[in-house]
Image (tube, helix red, strand yellow):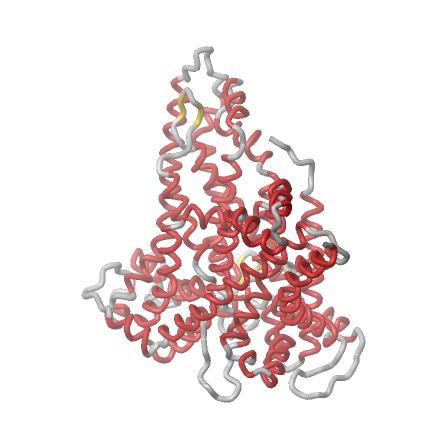
Length: 319
Length: 313
């Protein structure tokens, strides 16, 4: 992949040897201008090629979802369905259980994202702005979670959940509430890491003024500090929504049926199963419809909020 | 007043800390404990075997294989992704026309950025299932289909992709095909990241360089790239984590989750295989602990190597 840089170097190499052309009034030499044009054209071609490489597979999946099975097999490459087969979607939604997967995912995410944000910013706030013994210890404990591989915890985690489920059935395997708590716990590390640095930057003077006016500590947090950190909350919120929507390992591990009841699968977990089963059912168009339904909502949300999503996701790395 | 603060701090921390301890810390601590036993995972028989499991790791053929595959991803995923992302960001930001005001970003760079970022919002599972169809080893697959049509590939002998254990440049072909997916899905994100970093470099530095007669290549290699050093090193660390976590791709895309014939095993897949198929849970935990130590050492090492004086502007 990296070798593609060579053409650009070759084509523009004459340009490199031109002497410094900038004349005092800023007029550029002809040779340099020509080199610029060529480079501009090359840039457009390369960027367009990569854009096609990104879009074409996505478009192909969406379009294949609208073909019927015989066309998928006869003309696998075509982007134009003979007829629009919307029934693929209803089949994936009903028989493929995608409707149920969506509902499960939604139920879990509403609770888990809200709780992650609330508990995460509460903990981050206290750790960032109050001094007490053990502060560093707790902060580093949360931070260490960023480096540990999740697979290592798999079996003890399942055992813990299983045992807890005996005492509190709602917190056992295959329960929405349990998955909410697990998602929250596993999202806390990054949320706290992110919000911690954010709360540190908030000015002290406003906090002091609010205290002088007689606000309690929690009142100060909920009515003053939290509203002030809205940009940070939006970034980390987007990060958590995407991260938890895309989570597949934890649900595969924990949303298992223990007593033979049907599994409450979430969307990515269900898709894996669909793609494995499709092998012997050979319902290709149904699979394409399932993938389309899983990816279109996220893509649409992204296109609408693209600025926030881009800055939200890159802000996490920029720290 | 002091009393109020203590109560407030405890009240705010109690629930998050409790959840974290139970669902994250406790399982890890237990895993570390199990790694010293010969526990099978199902029975109650747990014999203490000391460091035997760790000693065994060094003579395990499968682990050695998986280790080198992990190293392969660890080197190639960041290398190719960053190179491609930098190149794309370079084209976006200096590919435009040159005029009195300096070199401009390319026309339509906003749209390119939106498109290149697409794979980042898709889940790894969706990407894996999608690429499974692209990589199909018959005329139905996107790539094989196209190549057969053009005549580059024989219809009776299509590319096997993730079912191909034959080495290419000394590494099983299946790993290269998985690498391609990782680069495809990561390049756009890091391009947006680098692009943002490039734009935060003050304009007057460029103006001064152009006044001195530097062209766009000189400005890029002599000014932009050195100033991006911090961002690139952070990206390298993040991509390192991603490279260690190629499990979703291996899980969905390769035959028998690590195949064919163990050609695409990585640490995580061997761990899962050992714990759940072979029922050697204590041994699997030893693998996990080693992987954790390896990860932390690597992150520390990378941060140490890439740490340098920060340039403030």
